[in-house]
Length: 315
Figure 1 (cartoon, one colour):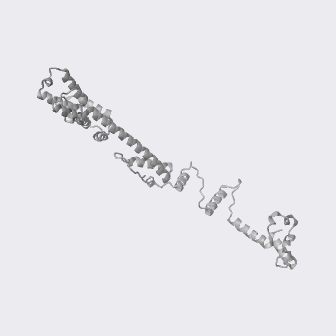
Figure 2: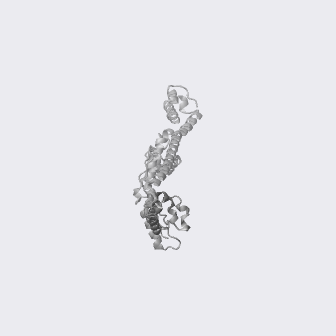
Figure 3: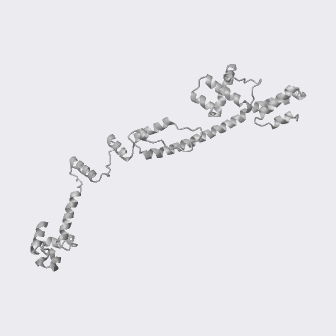
């Protein structure tokens, strides 16, 4: 029996006011007019009168109007597409799972997640306290942007990755600069007063032989490994007189700056040669000894001053 027929029968029997026989006290017997197969249904247990049943019916019809039926296994593509469109209409924040093998769907998905339309849409990572001598490589940054866009990264993901990359770059660059500085200090200790001359020879060789600009620039800034600098100097010396002129200085021992070890070797020669004018107090030989002591101890004037004051020189 249809619900409207049940309602009509109820109202007819109740005299139109919902109470059987016209008495309000019998309103609780509204189920008596229902067929036997439904009057005892648990679904009706909480309804006190027919008006509550009617309201529930109206609410149900309203719900059905807003509901979306999920296509079954026998539904066709058109029905499934209609379901998708209706679902998105009712819930615009719903995101459909894309076919990542489909370029168009995957790009739309990545844009929805936050990927910029173009690679230049990624920002420039903020770098604080950039060490002196370390510069940000704009070409490298553009390279990373292109890769990020191809991979579909969001702006937030790009910023996080680049933050880690730059932190590692700074750490590596700082370590390299500290290592280069330590190597140069060691080289200066080894070459002593001859350092400037020899660096000039190495630089002259690079410039005259048209070495790459970045190599020459690194040489000027003392950013080359010490072994490369020593190699360049040795090569300049090995070329001979033409090589020594590359740096516009004289590498012979006639007036050229000496390394501490070379100075020590000459001091040893003088002391071993008992006939040397130094042992006889020759002024020129004494001055030569002062120069050798100065070359042996670059940056220290103690031995030089002692010798100049006439104190005996001992090894």
